[in-house]
Length: 144
Image 1: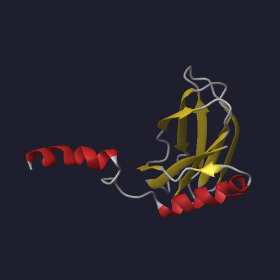
Image 2: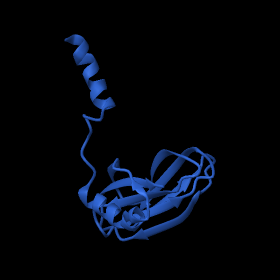
Image 3: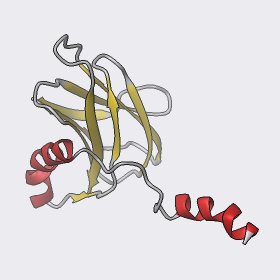
Image 4: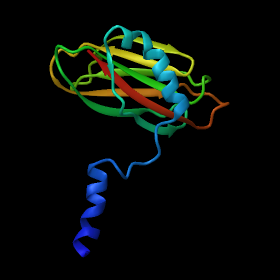
């Protein structure tokens, strides 16, 4: 019994059963709307999301393994359309590698054609806005 109590938290975390809150539904809805044309064009949307809450002006960093020869879009959504977001992607030397970015009310996206396989850094931030103290966000990516 003691062994089960010791390893149960590890098993739950390993298999994702003990996850925190689900991604923000409004943010995910914005992501799916922004990604819809790309999904129709052959992109596979990951169903896993990074998520959290933030104050406008706070910078967030996510690391992701990308593979040369694939094309990626990273989509970031906010729970509110008043949030202005920006997404950029950098290689391991800090050089920007996104070839296209888009931003509308409540979401932003960056397209990446990785020059080589490796770990890339996705950086995002929301514009400072005195009307917004904190907002929920979700981010995922699609590839083809």
